[in-house]
Length: 194
Image (cartoon, rainbow, N blue to C red; front, side):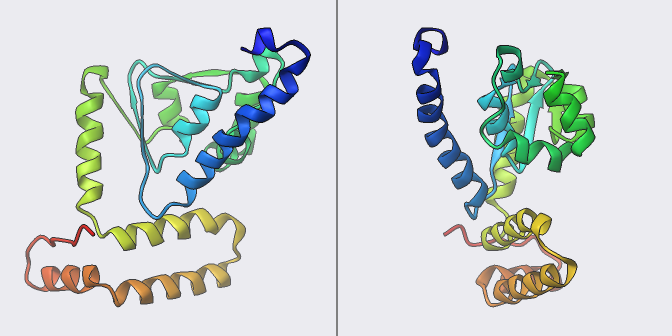
């Protein structure tokens, strides 16, 4: 598509990035955790979609690259926002500007992947992670997600205030009552799934 677009390439790229960017923003701001699984190449927009996960599971066959600089384009999908936060500015600069390709092990070491497993186990590991998170206290997880995301734009005092508001709001929810009762009763909590 890029090749056949000719002089319409700028318009095509703008048309393609609009829904991609909307999806990335929604995934980043929704109150539920996002798990991404990478089995093969996560490149270009696929890299950005992989990185938006709170938990990024990668098979040992996965690879990560920005790819666009190799064809004369700059990154999209939030890559220039996510990469410096995940791997640090210097590493992100080298990764993007040198158009590096990272193996799954390197991605884990650089902070782009959370866990690496054999390819044959990726689906099972992803399902297990989804089940674990679905059994967690949904509202507390959602508030934790937002606190972490917003922390980069906050000063300590505003982050402390946001934490105070979030923990107080969680305290009024049934999940907190169940979690505390389970702790006191020395049993596993059973959180509401609504």
